Image (tube, rainbow, N blue to C red; front, side, top):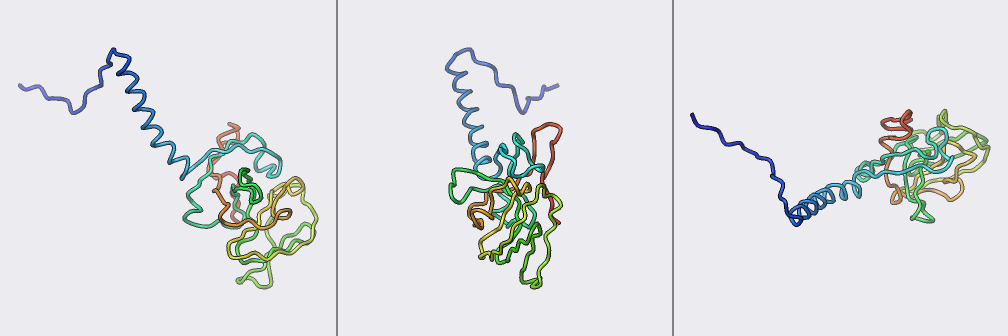
Length: 194
């Protein structure tokens, strides 16, 4: 009776420091080769700071942001996005998309109306997620690559009302996971695509 040869065998530890160092370097390079492209092109962690999206997101919320979706598609209304602040791209903001490219955003008091090709008479945006509304009046027509974004906590949010529309090129992605705090772990946190 012949004994079968195993298809795989464990690596036997070598006693030399050189061999151990070589294995550590190889493992480090493999990990770097997997993690770095993943973080640069697919998903990246962010920590929320500030009250502009309260109560949807609070300071200290640890989010994983999908960076690939908007390379392939575009944000929808009421989607929460993470983006580079246009006036200082070293800073990242988190806000909710209110107006889409080519639309006119009208705010009268606490109500937000949208006028677009499909609804030339306009429609009111559902803002059930908004806390601390801020009564204002303005009208802004967006260009073909612009979005109008606002925080859920309107009184505390520094957003498109202050610095203008957001160009698509500044959009980084959307939160797909909230990992902290533990009691609020969720998939697609802030989702409200009504």
